Length: 253
Image (cartoon, rainbow, N blue to C red; front, top):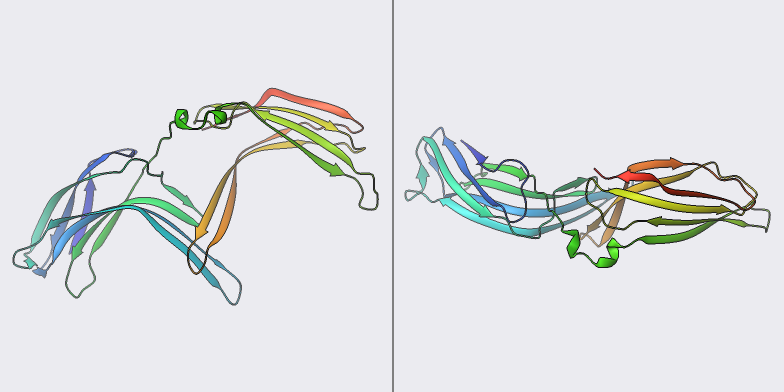
């Protein structure tokens, strides 16, 4: 006995897509069957373990949507030997998240075919969908499309001294929201008031994942992933300045 999902849609799948396909079942012998059904659902799940000898397991699960269709209910409560095919359609909701896999969890959109058998383990097949959710940046707050500036400073010096001199950095990017293929332009001005030279500055584009648990209590885990790294030049001490203007760029892919 077997069950297989055949999806007619090809390539990436977007929110609002009409899914069409068939569920194929094969029975090698006469089998008691309550129904044959298929589910379509979006699910986010997190899990991780902490501790050494005494471990603690954290997890969380949330369904964005769940839909189910009964494809067949035999009048005689059993299926004869043979192969059967049942068409299905599902309309994906709008405003659903893209698929995602990372160390502490995932977001998945799936189809699951089930042969419901009395008093037995139900044969199942899951087919994961490659859902890509496109965000229209024009619907985001307008200030995210404006230049953004950040100012920071770090103190340098010996721990046995009281004379701590700062390294001041003023950094600006052309905006805060981007689409793949766009360039992130970075303008930086750095002044080193300390007596030590700074050999180099590093600029990173970091993707941050935050996982939340529900059981046994709320907790979080964060994963930072460096997508792009650029090393810039350094700056001498005693008040010297250096500027990096529109020459160090990230190209999103």
